[in-house]
Image 1: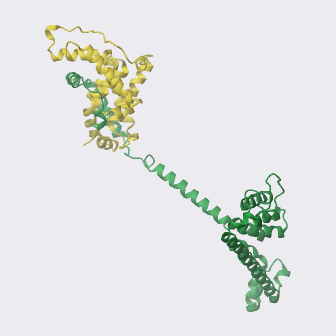
Image 2: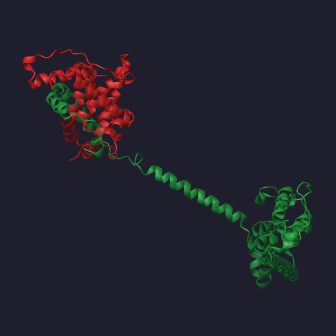
Image 3: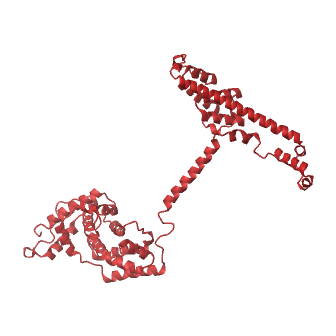
Length: 265
Length: 180
């Protein structure tokens, strides 16, 4: 008897009288019919106690599958939007991808080193590219390397400059608001990099961030990662300046994403 | 061997396990049905249906469920079906509380000490209880299930079952007044 039964309203006297009546049993022919049916059932169709598809493992398995799939999708999406230099530079400068021109150049190398092997190769479709000289290839790769170095150097400088400003701002948090000009929120000018800078220099970081948000919405839309760089109608200088402002405002992740977009453009 | 193990053995094809299970519970289930429907022939029919359902639904049985709860739930549902089929849905499930049970078996003063007379009278009084109260009383006496299990198998709340039982016991005591 479980503890729940302790709470059952009880009457011992009634129970004992009732037990004297507990003699009624089903008739023998009913017993026979039921037992015969039970025997017939086991003889004709023996069934397993547990079907592999009726167990209690289904629900946990389903939940686990959903979790794994969700995690994989999220990880994939994160990788797609991750602000890495690989995505920003090498994937788009043609050094990693095996472009047709690069493949043709490879064949040029083969031809120079082993002319016999070249005869066995199928003829290339584009004769002009096939005939690209070694010096041209070298010049191209040198130019690409130079551009990449320049871009990296400019990025580093930009980040250093932004970090310096952030550090200065953190060092003197009280001083800035006192110098803030009277920028009223009632006048709502179009968001611009100049306005962001103006707010920032005045120490109104909240407003600077709000204008930056508005600027972001205006030119890049809400889903920054899905933005098509070709459709962003913003001059490159403004773009670079905005990235700089974002870094100063400590919004490095957004700045990195915009930088990737800019590189792609 | 407990009920659940026997049922699992039957699921695997052991007909002997079913016989043990059947002999263990047949009396209580039969009395529950007979006293609920008040007719021996109908009770036998319902009884047979309940056990045949156990036989046919054995693959759906899971050891995590207590066999007795499962058995009495099937019996309870079969009884409700029977009430519906005969347009005799137990009104008393809604209108449960009656003040007095009629005295169908006037007590014979000379036989007041006779236990069997008390038992007969008790059965008569049980027969007059509203269905819901009667069911609660019979399930408590016959099945040995807990309050929570009875509530679960009848699809009602724990407090409702408790209250039905209290009313049933009070009514039965009043009905047996003079014999106790």
